[in-house]
Length: 126
Image 1: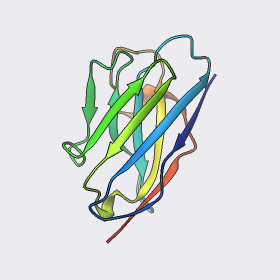
Image 2: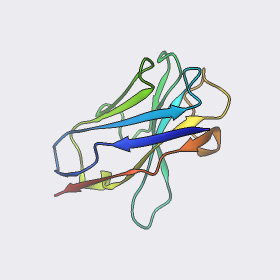
Image 3: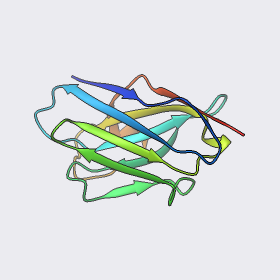
Image 4: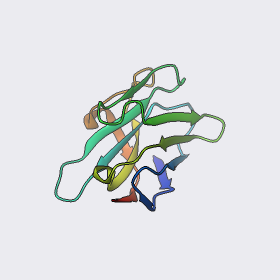
């Protein structure tokens, strides 16, 4: 079992920045590929970005590319999501997730992830 705890979400004005963190604990005997997803009110959860275990491959959704940056620190099992130039449509609960069994892949679909955090709320005011 892997437990994930996200933090860093809060209310921010449009154009502002936030950095989310997600720390894994439990069965962390190897580096994991990790992903960020978000779910806005009334919408399905969507992919934001992902990073493979070594940090050598990163994928982003088109909607955040160029404004969001994912990084990870394997020494403390933490992945970060730096969000710049935030827009009101970024308002959502942000979830991090750990891959099932492909640490070399920065997967973009939910079914590739096994463990999920409870999420952190990001609200961007206009």
